[in-house]
Amino acid sequence: TRRAESRYETIRLRVRRNEIFMDSYQQLRVRSGDEMKAKIQVQFQGEEGIDAGGVIKEWYNSLAQEIFNPNYALFLQAGGKACTYHPNPMSSINREHLSFFQFVGRIIGKAIHDGHNLEAFFTRGFYKHMLGRTVIPLDLEAFDPEYFVNLKWTLENDITDILELTFSAESDEFGKTKIVDLKENGRNIPVTEDNKKEYVQLMCEHKLTHSVKPQIEAFVKGLHEIVPASLLSLFDDKELELLISGLPDIDIEDLRANTEYHNYTPNSDQIVWFWRVLGEFTQEQKAWFLQFATGTSRVPLEGFKGLIGMRGPQKFSIHRAYGEQRLPSAHTCFNQLDLPEYSSEDVLRQKLVQAVTEAHEGFGFA
Image 1: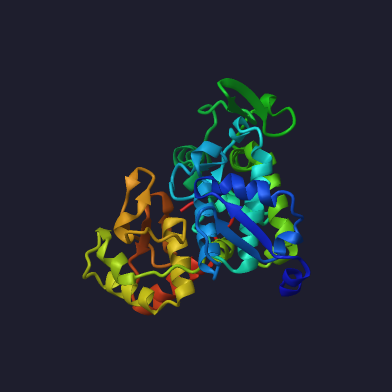
Image 2: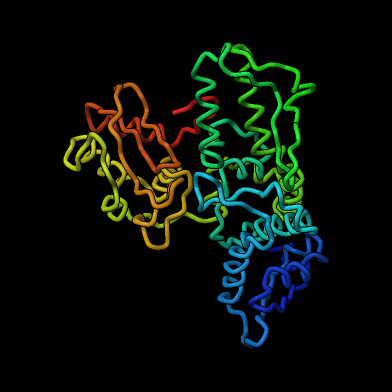
């Protein structure tokens, strides 16, 4: 990558602070993906000064905020995790939206290439899209928690003669309702007890993927111009989040001071063991734990008292669960950890490490 940097001339950007997105977009859109690998020098208009690393960092940070500016209508806050973002199905209200998505993909790729961490957090589903992987029903929880509960109910109960569904979905396009087939002729295929798993998977893909397919494709095209797919494929979705946003600095004592307990007390054996085990974790394992319990590795600016759930502020909570053989599970919309009543610290350590490091794929509803 250093060779690529030296092969092309340094890109000099001159941008207005209040127009950082549009000025950067206009000046970089004419560059090829390879040219984008060169060093970038930034000058803020009216602020003369040589860039010694500080200005470029500021440029990345400001740009990362502007990506989510609602005026561009590119991303929406996830329904269950407001600090994470997903492409907006209505982004076409902005005529240049696909060029903008490609530009944002390039910026994320450039930040990875340059080793700059961005304060930009996306839904689990969107990280999977960056990697070309298929979403699963569990990815829907943070995006649309209420709909997720309905799908979960569908899977866990006999729907015969109760639900009249077909393999189709309704989508609202600027006030007009449109029927979308989830598979060929889907609107005429009833959902039954036998095929409901397929329906749930297809509905999940419809909501998270197909409804924003052009946006995903434009973003990924920009991303791959800077970072090839073969390189990204070495990571899973959780590692990609940490690659883009960096390993967070997690203060376990601050988390502990902002934790609520249900059917446990701070002095319960399992709770004492839990905090001891978490304190032994490496920085990376702590980040994995935060992703597992809250759905994102983002630490709120004001510390863990500022954690957000689907209904606003929501502290981290630990609930007693039953079954020594079960792994701990999480409800990320509520920042809730369900911790079984393990019989020893060793068992708790083994189960917690297993739960946090395993990617629970499939229909593993907690």
